[in-house]
Image 1 (cartoon, rainbow, N blue to C red):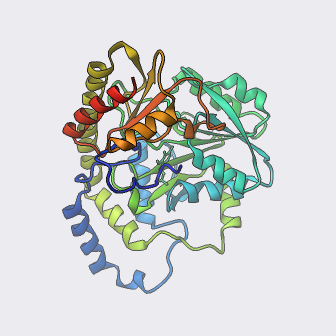
Image 2 (image 1 turned 30 degrees about the vertical axis):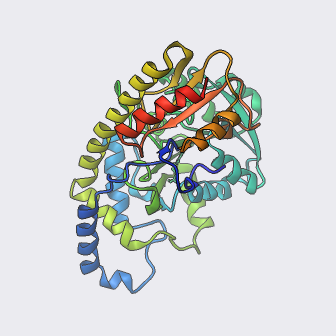
Length: 371
Ligand SMILES: Cc1ncc(COP(=O)(O)O)c(C=O)c1O
């Protein structure tokens, strides 16, 4: 199953982890920025433009990343992409001459596994513990590239502590190893201070930083970016010198305006408050309906929480079948595991697209069908 597939029609309660609040897209402001761009861009619309993406958008992203994530780079290192997949394809092309194996988090996001396999890499699973990726396993894995989600590990929700970040950076400093840092949920952290990005801790290191507008604005825009490390700037220019940008210039310019006029950071703040409210409501509902029969293992950021069920339970496939009959869409936790299996029964509960009312009803129904 794909994390992006749409729920078949007829579901009343959609716990898919990649859903945004349907009312949250800032239509009026986006329309205003889009129309302004349309009025201003006539010469650019009559030609091909910068293959790395609109320069003004790259500058706006640079400023934002510096303020919010401590990323240190110049706009020249940024490439505007049409989503994580396209960014990872580029990185795979850039690295495959000198690297054969890539380590991925297990459980972890399936997309990087697919992209690297399709590019003839060996994909090596590395376990995720209470501090994120197991660094001893990584060292023993023989991989020279690692893909990680340190801000909010998908799916376990672990935030990698600074001490481990520093050790991981040290690993990348030895023998030309590379880190791919996917900071996909960095804006949606509900408690505590944000931990600086790996890239910000070692800007000159072999760290490719990746971010997206999919979680705060819309996954339908297909707008994301990557920050190349200094070591990959020249190889990028050489390898992709004949390529064109695949991201619509109008969308890029609209995003630029949206950022330059301050709408983006205001929108991020609004979304953080709204999703924190949904997140906290969901935790209360889980405590109320499941009590001691469930433990929340991943929480505090992003658009989903992970719940481990205790005691004698139907297995995941049975829970999903029962849920479907009650109008509930559940994304299988096991899809994140490289073997398709997991040691315990987990529920992955996305809350982004649900109203408080639907969350209340849905969690109540779920607690009954998990018995
Ligand atoms: C781990 C992870 N990274 C990144 C993304 C965003 O990808 P994209 O920019 O292609 O929408 C997602 C979306 O679900 C994700 O789960």
